[in-house]
Image (cartoon, rainbow, N blue to C red; front, side, top):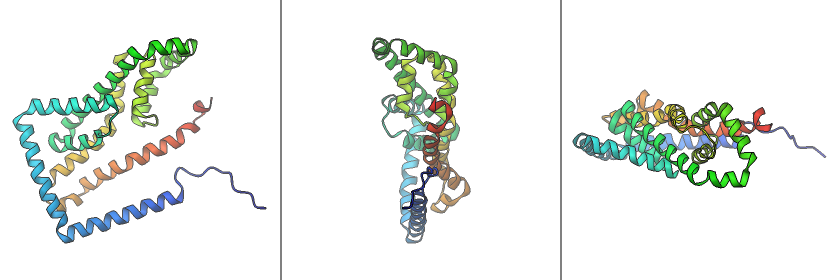
Length: 243
């Protein structure tokens, strides 16, 4: 009787790559049909109209629009509600890569900090009663390498965003440290999304969406979830995770 190979599979099984190839092929076919049939040009014209309205709104009410982007991003981060990625794309199209990144990153950091402080105020007293000495042991570990560990979780979020905020709130990590480390750790991924929106916003015609800048930005956005998923698969195999 043949024995099955117990060697763990690689980061992605062959079926995953097959489906990725199929999706890529369908996307290219759809893109080609949109370009040749005129549907793509029509959709792009509608996008240009809305983009012009967005720019007019930002230019007419610069402070109000910036505050709205910042506060909305903070709210999404605090409540862990989906939508921040789309907001980053819109901010990039409206403000460009640098100002858009600053707005989104500041709002996201503020929301994460509010979530962390809420967990500390409302949940830590309960955790102290339930966990006792174990909580102090956790605090000791976080005090030893908390900033570096938090930075790694922000760069590659192998732990869900909201759980990281709550876990930091249950610890004694300094609030300012949490804020600046989160800001620095989320900088790269935020810029990827905002820059993609900025590149799309610069396009003057449907054909411009095939420019190297747009394609590279969209490729970076598409690769981020795969990078995070690969990191989640590798993370439990680290020696410190098994200790």
